[in-house]
Image 1: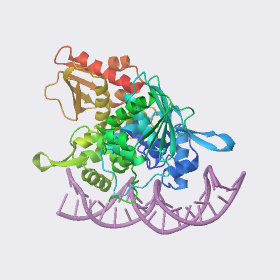
Image 2: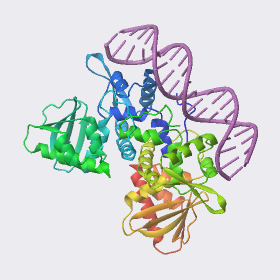
Image 3: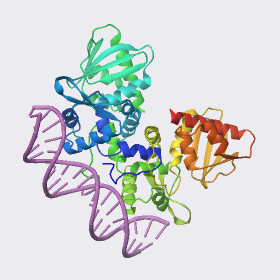
Image 4: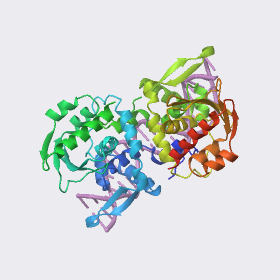
Length: 220
Length: 220
DNA sequence: CGGGATCCGTTACGATACTG
DNA sequence: CAGTATCGTAACGGATCCCG
């Protein structure tokens, strides 16, 4: 560990890269921003990272205090971000903004799960949320369920079904991404690619306003 | 190239990493944010990256439209950021903020030149600059000269001597970094580690206000 | 069955030497 | 000065196996 392939420079950018610059590491953090995850969830989400590499990365991240192990129910082991790890959100979001400027690969691989969208979406929402936004939404993206909450100017997104959603939105991963990157007009997305199930009247508008704003942040 | 070790995912974070996630690539961009550079300047700044790797990285970055070649004076070849490349500034700055949270390595390597500080410093200044700031400063850091200009709310920093500086500031790399990361109080830094040569009265205060603000951004 | 550890072929990196 | 060529070493990728 702490291998020979480290920069070991004073520069804070290099210091960051010595912690999170290895292959897979930033994608592991990306998926952990959706909430605590088990080894196998991470492995499947990362389109089949080799298990030895995942083990190695998790160990290094733990040693650096960026993630930690936790015992979940039924004796399962969970990995989760520490406060320090949560502070990678802005790095990941800026990477997403930059990456969005490049055309997707010709035949992209599908992730094993959709945890991948949580950081990007919640960080974008955080940038446009207003203090009066107040709702709990369930996002059903290709059958995978997320909870998106906005309360007192704070946005959170987790890879769990919602407890008591004000609104349930259903959409596909591809449509959401296309809308985010300006390939699909927001109106088309809302009209043709989204289903809304409203529990609390008016909260559907709050959700769509927030998501619309988030997608605009991303598009420019 | 475009090797087999790419993620090829739809996720914009992965798309970014497929362009700028390789070893050395982000550090090359970091140094280019200080202005156009020659091959050998980059090589020395990066503490002796292997020349074949530098060639390979420059080629990939050029192919992706992130940098471009330009012919300078006396037939020298220069590499410089494109508009797309300049948009990596926020990624680099967020990395610097994250990296600043880790203690420096026990015996860190010294970079061959100090281009490395330009992005971090200018991005931090950009975050705190006010619209009325208006000056041109020369920064002499361990004998290497930078121009820092603030005009109409825009900050720029380049690795060149200033043409007609309002103020010349002299300091050391280590002291500036220590002050940035809160290890040295700002007052100590200003009082004991900085020399100011004022050409235009009052501009020294403008400069120190800006730098002080930048360091506070970085410290928290 | 989930959570890893072990092994091995392949690829990328690092150092040095060399050339236009 | 600006790269190219070569080669040993370290990291990665994939498969298989092990253990609770």
